[in-house]
Image (cartoon, rainbow, N blue to C red):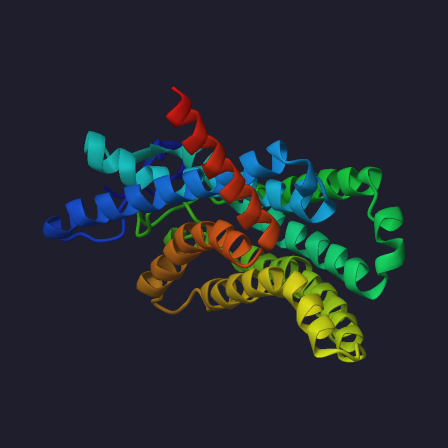
Length: 316
């Protein structure tokens, strides 16, 4: 179905991950498993942070926000695949498509912002440990969290304004598994040069490069401080406190750089879908795994919870 005027575009057709009929069941089961693991893993992190007082620290406060982000992000992007398989309807209304793009965009922005806030938290913890609780007090943590949420919401608005101004689409078939900016720009028969410039300037400078520089500077000071520690045990302990955050940052930036810095003139639909799937599925799963497996406090809280559940079952 071809639409030549935006006013006539009542819906888009989500093509999905693959057209092969024999792969649909495998894809559905894989996505369902990924979704359940993501929601379950992040719910466990959120539950443990709320339940145990020793996890009521700035680091875990931001981690709880990150878990909420991951659950929302996965739901916004992956639910199309599940709905298409269950209902057989791969249509999405124009309004729903724009809303999905807005929410997925601002959640990605928030991921960067919260990881930046966490890098500052790790900087204070390692470089100024005596004043850590004074600097990273509850008031500052709440202010940083509110700023991250609000900035993420505002950051995407210029993209939405320019996208709504598009007056022509060559087709209403989106070669993706959710409404994303790049596939819609490829479909547009209007001039998208302003949107591309905004994507490269604001997306690269404000969303990617600026937070990256802030994280990079933080870790320069962190590594410098760690190297000044005389004992090898002290160095390992200091590096251990920020290794989880550093691992997540490297993974996220690596995937998004490949995904969003590719020129839209190239036929990159397959690679874009692959990187999008990895970012929206694998990263939210890896976050709770990395922070739980590499963190003694979280592992201790999980063990205490499992012991309590076992003792409760025995008593009943």
